[in-house]
Image 1 (cartoon, rainbow, N blue to C red):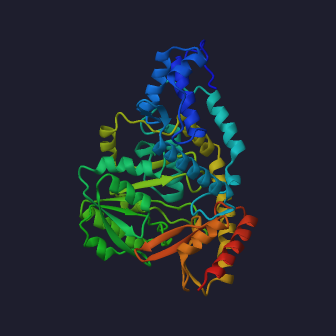
Image 2 (spheres, rainbow, N blue to C red; image 1 turned 30 degrees about the horizontal axis):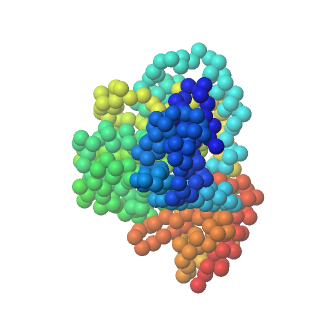
Image 3 (cartoon, rainbow, N blue to C red; image 1 turned 90 degrees about the horizontal axis):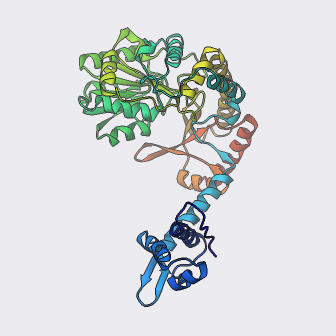
Length: 456
């Protein structure tokens, strides 16, 4: 029985259509016959045209089929599609909910976010004279930009002020904006290899040509860069995305000189710069020689929260002019209340304290994973990345099928992640940031049990 409310503002045929559609999606079987129009008219005391309108809409959307002289039937193909999709969603949801240990390479544990402080500051922002009825500055909240500038100058020696900072909603948003600014005079982009696939994907989506340049023990291959035909370089010099290599100052100067000589730009992704456990973060490449070649990008994802979606660009003066000309219609997609809460968080000293806490706790987790690998697996693996960020990169020295290992782990509710060094070589990216310390120890032991079973 369907519930028809003649007093509702929703037309009766729409009520009937929506309820029959829901019935098809959850209860009725493929090929099952629907009541005739005459029967529906008599049963619900509604007009024939009303029932016909509901059936017409269901037919138009493919939920039902009309067979002459026989009536209306639930569509077979649609029903199977709906059921398959629903079943797959249920399976995916069950798999997601049943994960016991997730070695995701780039997340923070939930207990690290300063929820009480954030809520108090957020309420303070909302109770202030915040004007929610206007469009705010196109580059982002001025106080937040001032606080970010001060932090970057002190911690990374970046040459900047609030005037050349643009607030964005995450790293990919920053890159999409850059591609729009550069598309008229940049044709080819050089990338460290291996490199961050998200960055590559953004440029490919905007039809840029890509050039792969290998990474050596001290960073990108300068000789290959000098011989390249690219006029833009994407680089992670503080901690190379895959290997954690820090590009030394001499090579940084060479890269800047390449850009100056060839009238090129550099995108400096300051990936993981705050999370260095063995030494102090080195100054940003952008700080060298007051250059105007480097577009500097940073985010709050790895050290604060990926969920609040706050990132920033520091633009050279010529790119800044272009931004103001091309994006005079554009406003930061980060909600103004979030921007102002973060600004207050930094202003009142909570950011510095939070960063110290994040470094301390994640260093302990880093060392737990490091000690585990060195004590139990060092004869079986090469550690390609350690000492920074939220993950280790390990490559087997023994004969082991990593794809099978990932599948077997999934059946044991353990989630592992593969990365490709090249077309023929996969490695494991083992994240520790999402765990609490005791859970991490248990997770590593469970992983090792699977590893030993998978050895050939």
